[in-house]
Image (cartoon, rainbow, N blue to C red):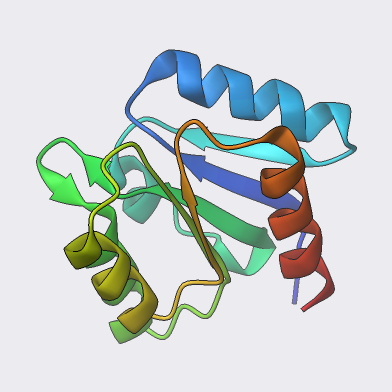
Length: 122
């Protein structure tokens, strides 16, 4: 089994992806970036993921639906949700889907790094 070696980042906002990429790399994490849910699902190789940072609003797809699909396919990787649209319904659905952390944009660098470090230790 390959080692968990990369943080998968899924966000349809290029500037957000780039910001998270820079932050994670500055803290010693390798990253694999995806601009759509489909790109993540097509990539596979989930056994190499430390965790998946998953935007809840991915245009046509919901990050929560993507998380459920992964779980249905037996993918067990910690998921850290990020969202710019925090509402009780999103929060409840995210927690029910089994997320590792739930961060609202704009989140602090420390909160993202802390969540990734906890996921890496899990």
